[in-house]
Length: 439
Ligand code: GDP
Ligand code: GDP
Image 1 (spheres, rainbow, N blue to C red):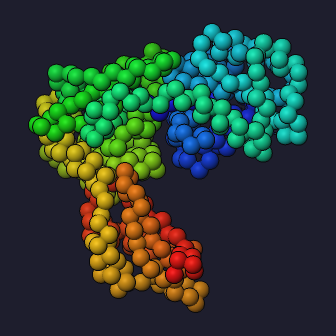
Image 2 (image 1 turned 180 degrees about the vertical axis):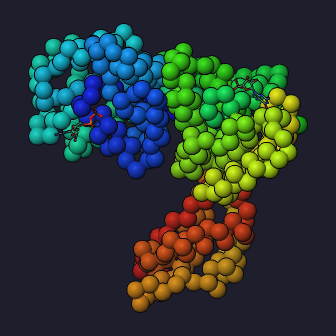
Image 3 (image 1 turned 60 degrees about the vertical axis):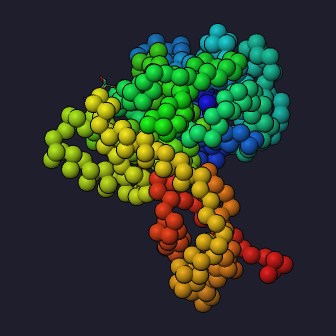
């Protein structure tokens, strides 16, 4: 699973500043639980080239006994439960407070790997020496605000999480599509997974130190093999009740990290929720193939099903390429269609369009409809190549990348879909300047 890195610390030490700096432009998923002062935030981030899930837990104050802060302390407990590495942020410009002592104590007992940061060291690398009175082995000086020391921090974290990288011992099924089932609590994930697995054959992958049971399950459905990732996570409910919804986001982010195809399972009786659209947004951002499965359709009348179909089209309009299938994990309705769609999606995700076809496409679709003139100049596109698969990435070589309008970029993407399909797959086209030398 993608390793989880949680940021904890008392209010105002700079957690959210650090989160934003480390997550950069990644889309954060915000989870707002009732009665919590600040939202939990999640983002997929790259730290020194390694993918992690970053969690900002919000603030907490273990010394304050009111229910609100207990709630927040619970969030931290959840973060610690789910995290592989914890970043404990301290204010390096001020003496430690009783809350800092408590925080450090809580973390010490958690037995997670923890990096302690002395933040707000904008000018100096020396934390107030009194921070060491917390009994911390090592303090990492940073300035989240100015980005000082955060590169080194990223490298440290990356090194720490490297032991959570997937092991190589399940290489025998390397070529089989890797599929993550995600969704809100009660959408029916465990029902679906159990139904698909039937007689289970699990791939246990053992890595030291994980709090999770990262078990994948290999499924052969009507002769189509694929691997469901993190099925143990789906079956295991979080021990911290208040965090079930938050934990489902975390789990989704984790599982997505190793999946090519994501099945977003929605409870059809509830319609598409905001959380569902956020999760789908995340699939788009991380460029995973995606399918939406509307579950529990056995509970809907035909009329309700039609209505839901229309609504979902509308609400998921930002990702029109995502197929929507109706299923019932309970009756088995639609499961064969779902598996067929998953396998097709994986195929598209890995597909490479032959250059000759791409050239023909270029002549037919793009040369005849060149980009419109902008600022008196007409940008030219010279050719287009497929640079990558899994996910497919195209590169268009052009005279002026900055002058290709958004609407023309959409046109190009739509044309590629029209010509080649790429169902269920987010398409990326980069526009690069062709240098003179390569003319
Ligand atoms: P959080 O409550 O722990 O999430 O703290 P925030 O990230 O909201 O930061 C609290 C305040 O500290 C904000 O005004 C930040 O601008 C400021 N801050 C955060 N990091 C730094 C830093 O490295 N240097 C300085 N001088 N201020 C910082
Ligand atoms: P999870 O939290 O996403 O893993 O959801 P579960 O698989 O635990 O399902 C939540 C509840 O919905 C359980 O009571 C299931 O029996 C029920 N459920 C799941 N799928 C279906 C379905 O297709 N039809 C009906 N009627 N109930 C379902």
